[in-house]
Length: 86
Image 1 (cartoon, rainbow, N blue to C red):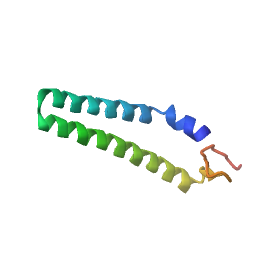
Image 2 (image 1 turned 30 degrees about the horizontal axis):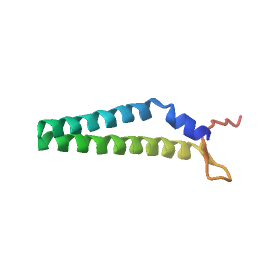
Image 3 (image 1 turned 90 degrees about the vertical axis):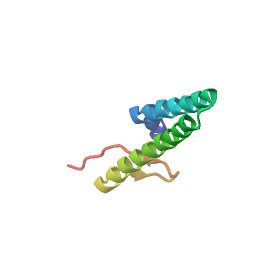
């Protein structure tokens, strides 16, 4: 649950959501203007915003796994707490 809250409150997530909604708005404007080019640009940008977010999250998760700060509990949830062993 903490992982979900961390992701939903991240700036990356909200920037991705706003880019996605802006792209959908562009597509709607393209429908209103009857411009196939604007519709296609909106759809491509919406897809790219989701793909870029997924790539960023995968990169962060990979970095956490390689540094040993990512653990998975018995329920399959991830815990990104930083535990230092001194």
